[in-house]
Image (cartoon, rainbow, N blue to C red; front, side):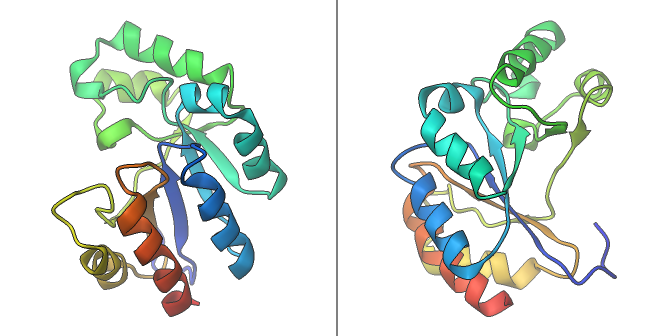
Length: 173
């Protein structure tokens, strides 16, 4: 993160899915805002048209494993195989570990092929205990120049994200 940089990086994890991702793309397009989508390989495989739309609209993409595996619970070999399986569907040098969890050996291995992108602002849109307004406040309160904020284009996050995202974009424009 570079606080001198007058830019905020908007990222989305877990898609693409038909129930949420097209809506996100519509909002981004309406506001002419670029984003990076850290995609789950299985979702890309199952929803190629939506994934192609992400690319066609010039958003960046990143590998988020094939099945959204948790690095803390997955042996190194299996973890790397899951990333390689995802890479069959997503051509990128960016990687974000699901849940932000990655072991030291995994990080060393992944870093040989990918740039690992984490975040400094978590909207908590996925958390059922977080209200839509609190999700919006989480996004706004902690963001600063150079921040990388994460929302989720997933069913679990849909209600909170759909409330917070357009408000966040309007406030930060």
